[in-house]
View (tube, rainbow, N blue to C red):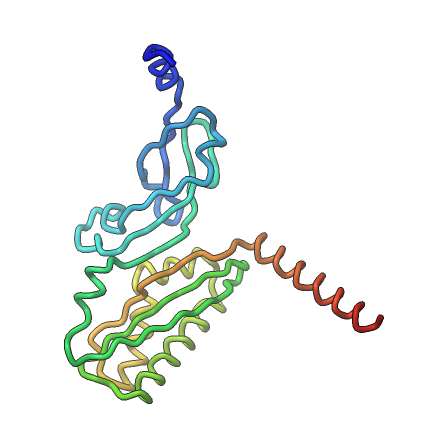
Length: 214
């Protein structure tokens, strides 16, 4: 292929302005090129909460968005992941302290399945029973929070620090804590994917019943 034809192909590419979801005020995340609008769908863009809020102190929070709609020259996204940087997480743990983690999968009121990973760091070394009690508190509060919230409301609660603050308030009664954070939040399945999985599960159950009757 000649340099002229390569150059022509580059010129034919269209640039799309990528926007954050409405809950993040449709902030511009950047631009992405493509020959056709369909090629843009599914692409992911990573940024930081600091970049979105124009606050460098929040640069330790990474956010990932996926393009799920294209209209004209705009590419719209959905939230798919929130994650704290490894350097920040390492800075929380001091010698002689305990790090308590939990991995909790929840379903929001609008049927989004989300995995949330809180972490609590104690001021000194906690014993096994105290760590277990702190983990139980984290699990209970995350499940309780998700039970009454939509996906958007749950993400807001995580990103704005309300969920970690609620866990801290409860868990500090068990053992003195240095910090509680939500280290990672991941969108695992959308409502249509959850519904499809449930239908598949029902079909499998019915087949099992038929086999048993035979």
